[in-house]
Image (cartoon, rainbow, N blue to C red; front, side):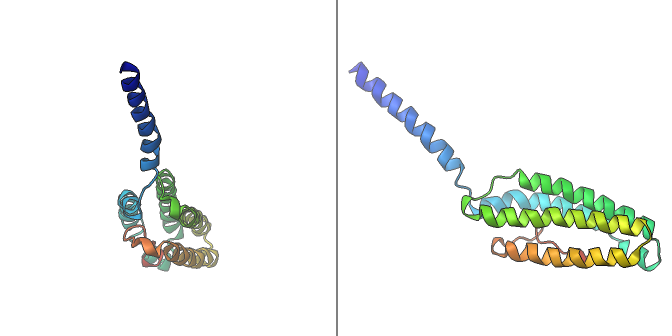
Length: 160
């Protein structure tokens, strides 16, 4: 009788050990969205502050000031990228989200390159990076359209 009870207990523990990781790995799209949107919101709000006057500064040839803001936005987006990368992904969307995160990383790099070009006084080169930035954002948004992101939908054209 005791052996039977021990066997049932061990079976229960074994089932829990198998089921717990499986249940944790089954994140849904909605759960993922709920975890990443606050991360993106924080970045979006930071960029609203950082890049608020950048268009005006470029028009007024205050390129070093605008460039410094682009570099600051790049650093903020790099931090966001690292936070997003750490979030568990729904298994069925892993390939799509990996591609999207690649676009997020590229966006941070383009902000950086644009900032360096502006600080060097090269408006034409900076415009090239801004064009790439907008194109990259469109690709990123298209990749995760099904998620219905609000804050994780990138729109750098509102600043540039």
